[in-house]
Amino acid sequence: LHRDRMETQLPPSESVARNFVASWMSLFNNKQFDRVNELFAEKITFYSPAINKPSSDKIYIQHILLNIIRIIEDFEYISITCNTEREVTFMFRGKLQNKTKGSGYLYVEGVDMFKLNQDGKITEFRVMIRPMSTLIELATQMKAYFKQLQQQQQQQQQQQQARL
Image (cartoon, rainbow, N blue to C red; front, side, top):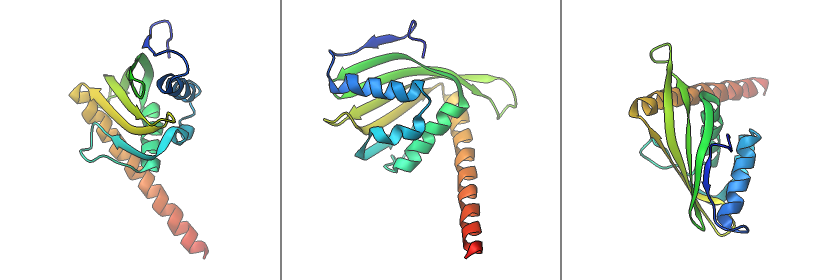
């Protein structure tokens, strides 16, 4: 995160939103998205820009975040706005390798929108991405990632069954 270029509009200290921003940015800056589920409420809903149906599967959401950070290069948050005491919006940008065309990059802009409970845990997480060409490429790469993940899980299950 380039703090010298980032715009922030945060409420006074000791607010739910402010504490959430500090926790999220700590995980992001320290590349600890394997711990992101610590910020999830018991019930969470994730709205993907590429899939029509929302998800409440915490493991799925965590895998999405881990992979997004891996495939979007130069990912950075450029703006943080606390809309209310329990709603926070992060604007981000980066670039995505254009694997469909085989070379070059597509530039990514988007927002992560969070709704929080009284404890500062995420109850709703929405992502919006532009432009459409980037969203299509991102969805294609995410589909390939989840297909590979599913194949790995199946191989592990087969290996475990073979040991029995």
